[in-house]
Length: 129
Image: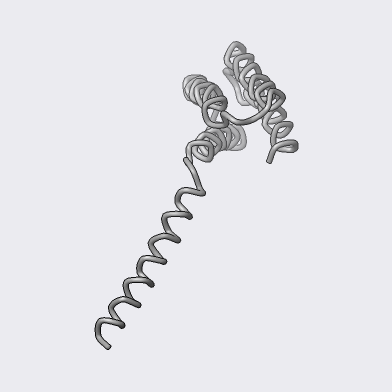
């Protein structure tokens, strides 16, 4: 009786382990979620600075530079997507490059340059989210 109980317990534990392993394999790499989360954080910081009217040029430039680095990771994070998706990612990169070239020195300028970036994000999210 004891041996049968141990066999059943072993089967249950093995089934649970297999379920956990399959679930982890199905999730894949979280890199794509991380890239999107970092870009969302950077945009959130910039927007919060605009709302608080605390737009330091160096902080804004640093956030935009970090946002550009994250935007350049889109191709690596989503390798199986189609060409229009990558074109949308390139449009985001171009919008960030234009914002960096403008060098936002005030909250009004920062708000103006954030709009095309937000529009590029939303255009992609409407189609692919």
